[in-house]
Length: 227
Image (cartoon, rainbow, N blue to C red; front, side):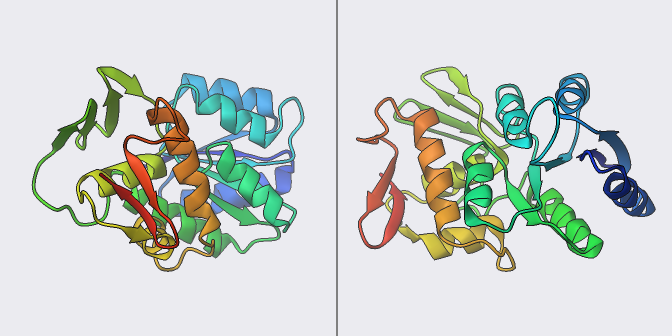
């Protein structure tokens, strides 16, 4: 049974999402403000979190950022605004996806199921190796952990999928559109900027000098690759 945390200060929305997810045999916890959400995220192990941006105590963006300090649980941001900046900010703070209100509950369930299916999976592997090691970088596919010079780096699910795909296919240049389809799936509604945001965040975590990367390189006008 998958365990989900739903965070929104509108109790009617929480009630509707909770009821619908429970019909799909999911265990659902709820929180109505950022403080309560953060405590529950610390005290429980969730498979996914639905997190509204506009919350009392701590905003959804603040909660997302704080959760990323100790967990890579997939996070879907819920926002009442359709502006691109909200979506980009959500990704900047470590979210894996976003849904704009008002939404159809069927869309919410489809997004959750898509992320749960992909979590722990990446694009087809080049070989059967479960651990990749190169240039001080170690990637353990089974535990989904990444280490730089022996120290673990806390990556989100999408950041892990990106680095694993690139490292397992060295010197292959992937366009942003290809990465969007391989990592997020062909039905993902976002655009290529999503890839740029995640690559930038990934570099900030694994590169000693993100401006002159050692691992994830840019092929100007084409895309990204690992060398």
